[in-house]
Image (tube, rainbow, N blue to C red; front, side, top):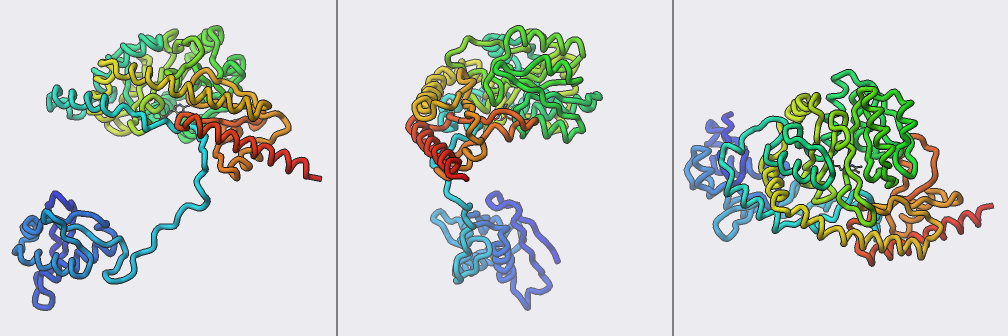
Length: 483
Ligand SMILES: Cc1ncc(COP(=O)(O)O)c(C=O)c1O
C-alpha cells in the first residue's frame, strides 16, 4: 500500500494512506477522509491542529484538489473538522472524540486543593522577566549577526558571552574569569552534571557535598556516575572545613556565599583553608554561586574562584536572577579541565542556543542585567522583611537564619516542635513549605522550615505566616491532648 507523506507546512507529517488499487471499492476522497478521521481519533491530529491547504495536500498526494475538498467537506459535516475564516481547516474534535457523540471526559484533576500560600523554594518571580529589554537585545542580535554565526559551535559557547561574563563577574563577583576558560551550559544542573562526568572519567572516587544540600543535582548525579557521596556538616558559617579535611574527597560542591539552604557565609579564613585543602590534595572545588546577586544587608563576599582559579570551578546561573526557563548557566573552569568539560558539553547536547547566548551577551554588555538586579533587589528585600516581621510577630520561638541574602530563609524550630508534624499541619491550613530534614544526608539535626519568598506578595507572606502560626498551635494542641 503506498504511503504518501505530504510536505505541508501547516500540518507536518500528516500521514495519509491511499490504496489506488481499491478506488473502485473506496474512492480516493473517502480514503483521504478515513485516514484523517483515524488520525483524529488516535490523537495524532490534536484539537486545534491546522490541516494543509487543499491544494498543498492534493499536490503532495498526487490527486486532484477536488478529492481533498470533498474529503474535508465530509469531515466538516461529521464534526471532525471545522472551516475557519481565511480558508483554513482545523481539527474540531478532541482525541478519542466521536463525531456526534459525547465529548471525552476532561482529564482527572489533581487531588487536593492548591495551597493558599506556597513558600516552596526555587520559584523565581518569573513575572518580572525584563521582556522589553531582552527583546531589544534579541533585535540587536538578529540585526547584527551574520548568518554563519548561527551554525554549530564548539562546546564552550559564544566568545561574546564569554567576554561579557568575564567583564561582569570580575567586576561584581571578584572572580578571575578568563574568556577562553568559560563554558556555557544549561544552568547549574547541567554544569555539575558535566563536571561529575569529567571527574569520574579522570578517576575521581569521592565527592563531598554540604549537609544539608539539594537532593536533585550533585548528589544523585555523582551517585549515578559511580562516585561515593559524602556529606560534610555545615555550621552557622557554612561548611565545617575541618570535617572536609577528614573526608578523603576528590572534589567538593560548595555554596560559600549563601549556603543552601541554611544561609551561612563561609568566612575568609575558612575560604583560605578550603583552598589549601584543594591545593594539597589536587582536589577540585565546585563553587555554586547560585544567588550571590541578591544581597541585602551584608557586605559583598567575593567568589572563592578569584582566590584559586586553578582549583575552583565557578558556576553561575540565570535561574535566580532572570528566569529558570532560560536554561542558561556558565562555568569558569581551570585550564587543565576546560577541554574535557567543553567536550562533555558537546556530547551532552551539541551546545546551548547560540541566539540566547548572543542575546544574553548583548543584555550584559548594555548594562541591562545590572539594571534588572537593581530593580529586583528592593522588591525581594521587602518580601524578606515582610517574612521576618511576620515571623517575629507570630512565631517568635522560631529562629530565622541566613536572612541577609537570597530568595529564601530557613527558620529553626524549637526542640518541642516536630518538623514533619508542623509541615503536615501547615499543609492542612493551606500553607505549603518544606522542612530541612529531606535535604540532610545525616538525619540528625534540628528541625527547620524553608521559606521561599521570591514569588509572594507581602500580603500573602503575612497571611501564610498567620496560617503557619495556627498550624503550630494545632501541633501543640494535639501534643497537649496526647496521653
Ligand atoms: C543550590 C542551588 N544551586 C543552583 C540552582 C540553580 O539550578 P539551575 O541553574 O540548574 O536552574 C538551584 C535551583 O534551585 C539551587 O537550589
